[in-house]
Length: 425
Image 1 (cartoon, rainbow, N blue to C red):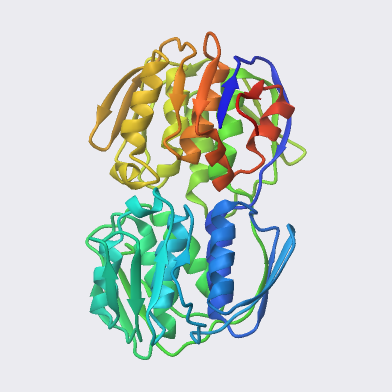
Image 2 (image 1 turned 90 degrees about the horizontal axis):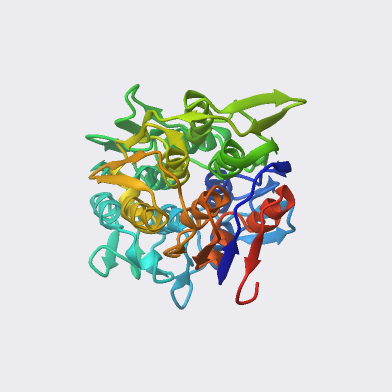
């Protein structure tokens, strides 16, 4: 699908931010690993979370679902063994977490996904699972891959390049036969691990973590308690209307945000304020209006998903904006550092690519033909960039927004953005 996006000024209206993908997928896996019936209230209903829910069904969970409530009766570690590979679509988070969970089974379970998912490196997690008793097979560390247990526990070193490896092990190992100890030399995206630890605590699972989050002790033979919990709104999704308002907003209102939640991406609102954004709170809603922005340097290690849209914000700020210490952004749905550099340069941006980020000099943008690389955050970030560009921008592959934000186009149209599908919608 190609979107034709026109420049837009004086955006106004309210966006009710949908649920967190990170919370929703962890909730599904926690429910799967329990034996009772859990209720997930206001889940994110998107392609990625549907992949997690479908995988849980295939592995034996009983699921009752509507857009507002998912009821899941789990299996513990007594999974139904599928006869063919489980298709996880585009969901890297699901692949990492459910692969470790599946290693609890005594029979082999195979996972696969789309072309993008097959490029998401898994070797670090598979190495840890092997050390903990699982038998793993893969295509050079990539999907399609299979795991066979039982995961017995023990000691293992964990690759901290992506926090998802650690989160996956932390969710699976409480059901292993023996106690486990995990050690890391470093950890990127530590706030996502805090979300995982919060879910474990909520489900009655005991895990001891060192203060520096590099050492973990996990007792075995535990049980997940069933739960009933509301999924909080997604701060990584809220970043797009936030930056849209910073660039073109007259009165952009963002609802549903809970700043007491553990999501690291809430820091994007701090970044925006540091750049001089006009942000206020009225009746529990965040209100954003266009303002003169000034470049700053931001360490995005804890907020790698913010890189695409923060790169856009940098284009509209005076001076230089540095996005640094985020090498893991190269290992997402695509190499987000290289791809955002390439596409924003097509629009006239002055960007220097770094090994672990980028430097953006504020400069006028113009419309151009750009591509999403099948990455939802790039598609949405380029849509935001188009709002302040001179002339129309055409975004190829825009349908990938469905992965985390199915209502993105309709919500932005309600703010006054002109998004026209050129080949159907």
